[in-house]
Image 1 (cartoon, rainbow, N blue to C red):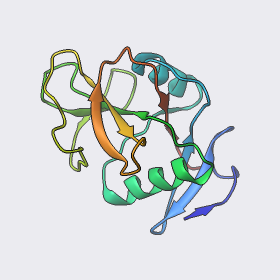
Image 2: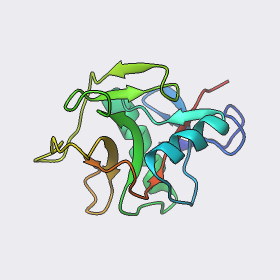
Image 3: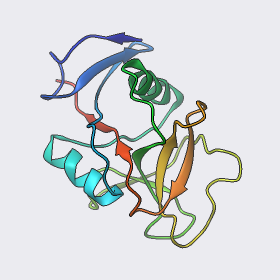
Image 4: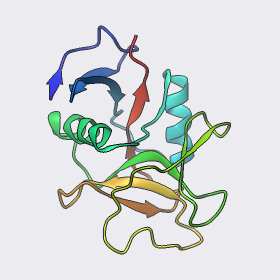
Length: 148
């Protein structure tokens, strides 16, 4: 992993290069609900992070761990709010969705409970597996911006 600064990313985003690809991430210090986090990312020039392959997951993991940013979890763009059990990435604040082509769920997750419709990366035990939770829970989050 290489942290190269912000030259190719939107303001307040950090460029992370892994596997020959560059990504722009931001992880504000505050916690928010999933909807608030999604709106924050949109306003800051990005979206909640979409983890569509193992390379992206490595980049996100490296970003989270690079600055001692670990805590109990980070919201991603994953949701099944529109159809329980049908997990998708919200890519444009509710106007665009992508099906999961890659996943890294923790054992026994997702739980298929009606009220756990949003996905986060669990960083508490170090394995960085995905879990579902109530969208109203307060968590940190990772925004993803476009490289220039």
